[in-house]
Length: 221
Image (cartoon, rainbow, N blue to C red; front, side, top):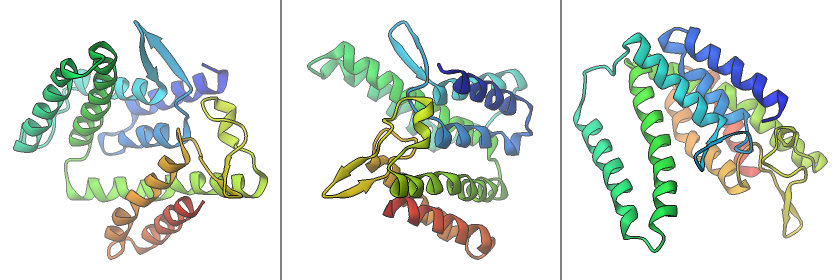
C-alpha cells in the first residue's frame, strides 16, 4: 500500500471504532467512494482491498461492543444467509471450482459484511435517512473529480494506484472513472443512488438536490 493509502486506512478504521453507532457507516461509505481497489493486502492468495479491511474493522467493532441488528434475526436475514451458502457451494459446479470458490468467497464476504453491518448500525427510519443524506454529500467530491477528468484528461485518484492516470476515450469522448474499477461502474453508482435521493426530497430537499446533482453528473461523465 502507498503511504497515503495507509494513512487513509488508519483514519477511517479509527473513525469506525470511535464514532457513535448511527455514524459508524460513514467511514465505510468514505472508503468505498474515495479509495481505489488497487490498495490493500493479500492473505493466502485472497485479496483484501481497503474497503474489505474497513468491513473487517466494522465486524470487530460489532462483536466487541455486542451490537446487534434491530429485531434479531428476521426472514430477510435468513434468505441472505441461504443465498450466501448457495453461492459458495455452487462453486463446485463450475469449470474451475477453486478459482470460482475464491471469487465467490470474496463476493459473499462483501455482501454479508455490508448487509449485516448496515442492519446493526441503521436500526430506525431516521438512521436510514441520515445514511442516505450523508451519501448525497459524499458523492459530491466524486462527481467533481469526474468532471476534472473531463476537463484535464487526468485522474486525481491515480495517486492511490489501481486506476490509470489517463481516462479511457471511446468515440472521441472521455469516460470518467473516478475511484472505481471501470467507467461503467462509476456511472452505475450514480444511477442506482438517484432513487434514494428522490426519496429524500420531501424531508430533506437540500440534500436531495445536492445528491441528484452529484449522481446526474456521475452518470453523464
